[in-house]
Each structure stands twice: as structure tokens, then as C-alpha cells.
Amino acid sequence: MAEVKAVAHRRARIRSPHDLGLAIQQARLALEWTQRDLAGRVGYPQSVISDMEGGKHTRYAERLFDLLSECGVSLTAEWDDEE
Image (cartoon, rainbow, N blue to C red; front, top):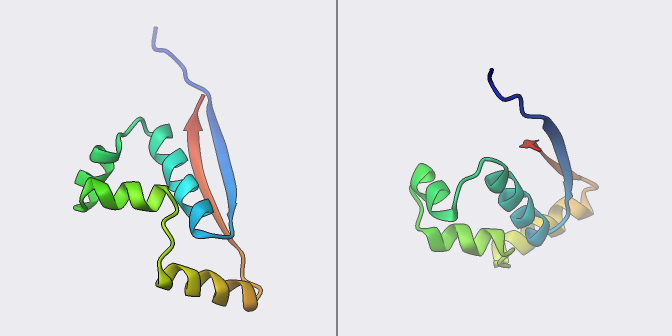
């Protein structure tokens, strides 16, 4: 008989590059992918995935989140997570 896995729907508010990095990391882990797996799928070096998941602040990211905040825009990330 096939094993049945419970799937939980996850959601996170994204207010900063750090929050975005955590959401990417949690979604990647839910898929049971390594950083190298994800990097290969999107064609980026593994170091880019590491920087993003670590919430590396760049001038662009800081400006983006400043603009979103000032305009009253909120971002939410959603993904399914096997339990």
C-alpha cells in the first residue's frame, strides 16, 4: 500500500530580504532539495542561493522593501510542506 503523506500549507509575511530568504529556504527544504539542487534548476551558482537564503542585503533589495513599506504593500509567500 502506498504511503500517504500529510501536506501542510505554509504562509509567511515578507517584510525584509531576511524574511524572503527564510521563505525560500523553507520551501526548498520542503521539496527536499539542497542549495545545489535549486541552483542547478535555475541556472545560478550555489553561492547565489546561499546569499539569498541568508537574507543578504543589497542596495536593490533595501530600496525595494522601503518602497513596498512606504506604499503600504505587503508580500506573503505560500508553499506546501510535507509533514
